[in-house]
Length: 71
Image (tube, rainbow, N blue to C red; front, side, top):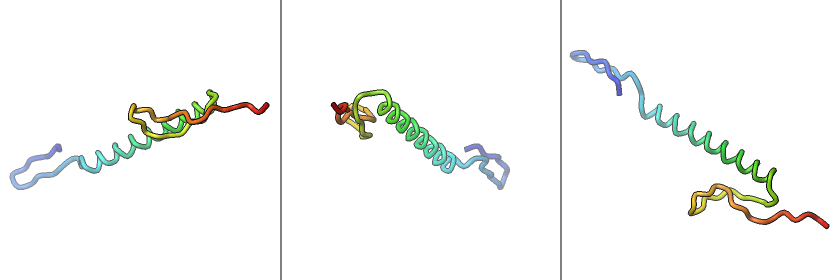
């Protein structure tokens, strides 16, 4: 916190809790958008179906079923 110091007055120039919450929220939105884009890319450019799920290996999208073309 940056403060101006006067003999009987202390004025905070920033609100770190509010700024941190805003940054955290913005970061979560950015991550969610990246995950959505990755899932859309996987569906469009591969031969399988995918789901979003956190794995123990840190993968955000997991293959579920192969796509089979009708004969």
